[in-house]
Length: 156
Length: 156
DNA sequence: ACGGATTAATTCAAGCTTGAAGTTTCAGGA
DNA sequence: TCCTGAAACTTCAAGCTTGAATTAATCCGT
Image 1: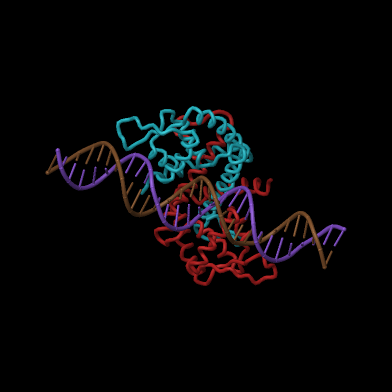
Image 2 (image 1 turned 90 degrees about the vertical axis):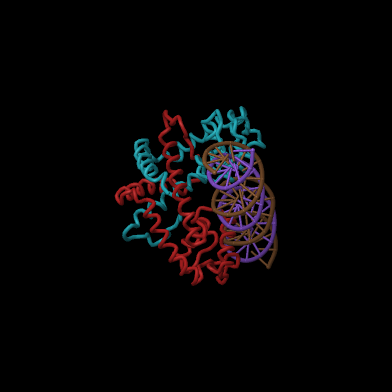
């Protein structure tokens, strides 16, 4: 996945494979750095951050299934992360709407306060880590990746 | 990490954050699709594929530490994956050089044969999944990501 | 109103991942 | 030689992740 040690791949169609490898290595490198900092500075993890980030934008709460769809992870996965966040007092499950299958999940007040602090640091870190990319280049790259995604999503 | 539901972030320095979110979503989407296909078609996983890909390029074998450095994962992680590949007969540990702390890890003949088949499918899939990206665009994107990495790696 | 299909969530086993701690081996200086 | 420190791995606990199976509740056609 990440690979390509010595003989650089060449031939027809290799450009896309090479792109994929770069993409993956870049995101893994950045991800590793962010994870490390989240751990060191805030004693938290990337998945918890992801969940809290999603909930932060949805003060009225989100369904578990919305959360898993949005984060691109499995349903059972979200259950576990939410369990831990609940036990830490950062997130609450509210089972008050009509449909008793669902539970609306939202940040607690404390969770919201804490997340705001972490998010500010996170944004600063990303700015640093991508410091080599000019703002203009960032916009162009974003555009390319956006068009990729919009062509892609909603298949199957 | 992946986030940004409704109010698109704006303000100074948000372009890089947005780029990071796109990058992460793109790689997660592609990764999920490849993982699914590896499971369905070949009953294997992405980490196993990564390891085998690295070993395929190094017929003489690799040290565990080289492997973990190259794949950007932890040492203990590689141990577990190799254990499973060994038990499946796809990889062998050869402890024959002078330093008895190290073990040279390489694909078995069967592992090599099987990997060649999987790799061909994998390359085809990546070509499809990135089909929207023109070859030219792929090269430009690769260039940007490469310069990012070369600026980045070997810090700290 | 009934009953079968759908949907939301949880549970579970297996595997992946990390960081820390532990083991074995090697290297180099007193 | 001996000893201290570094290096290469392994082990371990905790957490993340998936896909499949399960439970519970709702929907809808008849």
